[in-house]
Length: 280
Ligand code: AMP
Image (cartoon, rainbow, N blue to C red; front, side):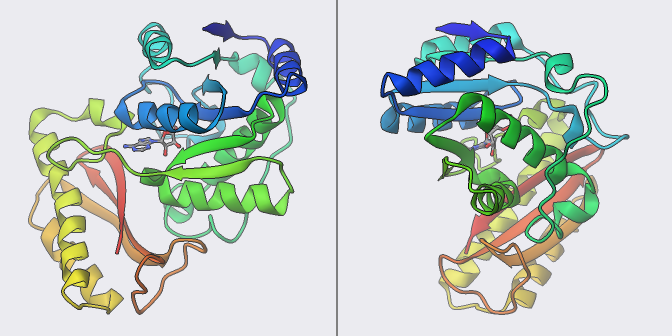
């Protein structure tokens, strides 16, 4: 496995891999890798012949009062996991190389990323879109793998790639959960045991909503009311949003259409912000 830090080296490596006819699969991450990330890598290994993982904690997607400084950085452990997973190249550029002094260009998708997390984290999708486009330009992937755990992020990146004619195919991968249902996330590390116990209510409420729909419920308001009611029972949880949306446009819908509608939740568990969603 090669570890590349230099932008120029990554660019020339990507060009030569393509010239040699390799299919490049790309998994962008912020590190602190867990089974969710590894499932994306596995997917990439199955459909590409060179797998590139990027590890970069992207400052432009964090708000001023968010957890950029304390976001877990575990490069040594991450490199070991990548090696074991059969990754070919890990790209871990420096902050200064990605955003040198005077950097001033951003990618801003203004429709799909407008609501939900777009409201509570105003610059988040602009930061995510900007770093992804930069990484796509450097890595030149045929396929790029994203987790449905971050459903709005998937939808925004798909829109950006389509709108800007970027030649990579976005592959969406299923959410990997802990055995009890909690969606895996690097931020789960922040949770104390008591917070972890309350956090479980989020996935439980989503599974309950899915059951309701399986049993005939098709009204979004009913689903939202039920999830809100369930989460309100937990004193550490504060809801940021509960919304039933179309999974492509990420706009609210009133009636649930099977396979096209997801319900998204963002909530604080004390000071830890978690998101999750499920297809209805
Ligand atoms: P992050 O390092 O949190 O930026 O995530 C990198 C990629 O891993 C994103 O495409 C995420 O959606 C994906 N990811 C994170 N958690 C999970 C999970 N539990 N299941 C599947 N994919 C995930």
